Image (cartoon, rainbow, N blue to C red; front, side, top):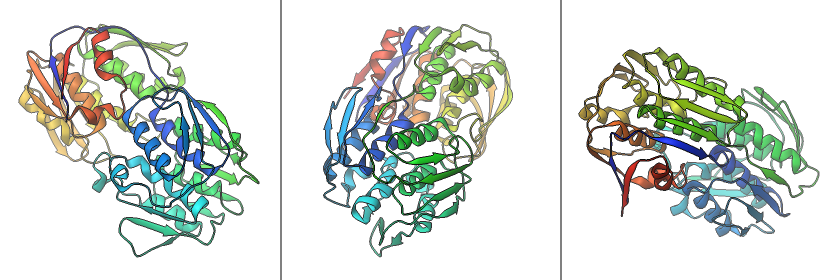
Length: 417
């Protein structure tokens, strides 16, 4: 287990470029399992979650070229097993995306309990409901064990607009017999990107980017090439990291249209930022409370940014209510900042009131999930004295070359372990 030691109080400034969207990379890699033809992905983020999924599909029979680079060639000529390695599955919530392709290629899928952030609080009932609608059957085995006599196209209503639930439905519908209609579908950019990739593989997809998607399966899957769009969550994260130290940054690689949903509430806090030509710029600013920031389904403010904006609110004058109605527990991880002198009142699992501005003091911090871990690093960078954040691997699941990038911006950090 690695620890990041941070000497706070330094102003961070500079330029960075982000790679492809983590939330696009995982479903696209899973989609490569639908065909026995080679697929090529470019601008793939070099992060731990991608490494784990590649190890999983390699263990099932995939041949992968370009491991450790941003360009991958994946060919799944045969899938040798319906049981992905349970140890690796336990490290990655995104391993649930293998269910549809395994049912399509093997007629069965036996998945251990997926890991990731707070797995016991984030169920996959939406995913399973979609698969059951297309003819999958539950087996009386540990974990998530399913089989099918053949996936059949269906009309389905998702009980929530889950991103990975929608992606699971899309992957299964692409290989089913007959057309499917997915209603109450998620509309996030990474769902659209999966639709585009499936179209390149020969699947008919209508309604991408809307809450109703119609899927006509491929007569025969082909290989496909795709360059991933930049990770707007990572771009926004680096913007907040610079802002909380009263620094300035220019982040390239993410689309301006995607950055708008992140920039809007930041501007309400008085942050000087703009986005154009796929560049996100943040300048030193006098911050003030935004009164209320609420997450929402796309194009609402993304839950993946809520921890970071909460930390930023500790440096804004006034009181801000942050409401993440999508997920429980994400805000709980920030309660430990009270020992850093942050003025926080946790109303319930979904709401926190932040009163600022407060000069934070360094301390030891526990990175309990990916996004709050990055937020705690941001808090440590703004604090007086030294802080430690562990385990660092939690944050590295979604932020590649993290220590090196912090140093490029001028942070005094050291990785131990």
